Length: 521
Image (cartoon, rainbow, N blue to C red; front, side, top):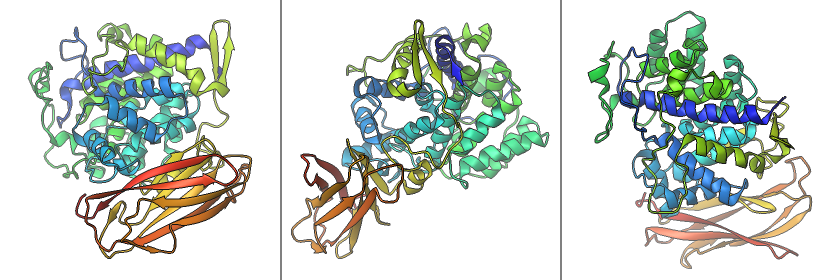
């Protein structure tokens, strides 16, 4: 399967203009709970609407432009630290954890009550467009992105959305696309439960209001409990121009921050009950309430990819500004963020051959894009810079931090206490090395920085032999463990390092991590 350059460009533009339309449409209704009845923009759209759903994508674009395709969660975390100003919710928690020395994926999990919320799956379009036709690669990048400030359902939602969107460049059937997205996430999780419930409601003939009610009962969301629009913005109150048609008084109360499953479910409601009509679809998503700018924005991007910008009615394209206004980025640094959807799309298109060169064939008028042979998850597929299947990556998160080097992947696995230590209590970490070369390697692994007074059980150094990687995981990985007992925990944090030297080679790599006193987190 191939698409030409013109089609690809139209789909990328459709993705982001659809995102902009849906986000603008839903903005006045964000955080409200109830059923609405809108069929058009309910506010003045002559001025651009700030949208944090796009903000982070501008940062990721800059990372790709400067670092190339070999980026991971550590790269993205550094760019986040440099350019993202937001200090609230999961954004703030993930960033603060990283500044303290907590590396991804632990940065997205520890002390983060919003780890299962919506901040990650709403920013997957950049990965879908750069990995068009390769859902596996899009899912991989989405994981690296999401684990900076999310874990659990927050990651699953991002993986599901990215895989689905990447496949939508070549597949248009909603049921097939939903199945592709589901194939990349665990068999038991809230996101899957939400999606399958909505599918069942639609096939049983329930109306969208009934499907919404069943969804929010099975997978409660805390978003609609916030109860009002952002303070200080120029939006017209949703309740002033479009009163709630039906208020809910009998929905179960949600755990704060558990929002991703229900929100993904609402995206699916809008998609199915919209029955192929762009306007009806995004309006249905908004009419369900909750995180309306995100659900309608993401649905708009999916539909924009499937049909391209040409498929979006002029009513919607002409009614929404092309400009981009950011709301959570640092304006005092030289990020060089695009200021319009058109400029953003041009820069994304230019980077497709960098990220997906193996599926890019240049022509006189640009390039063609080829899809991978199998869009759904394939457990036998190895992923770039990992040499392990994707489901195993999800299962290990968030206790395992990864560090990617030229010929080696280093994994640091933490015990049940994660990154905390307690006086007199044994602490263990496991270091796993994954060989990425067609060459056997012999490594010496050391743990550096342990206080001299701490009792070391065993040794602070071990040797690890690695067979060459040849398409099998059987022998190309090896592990060693370090255990120690702190006699006293006198500081709030301890900055440690795993040093790996390759015998017979000049390469020496370092994987830093931080341990904290048990009362410090």
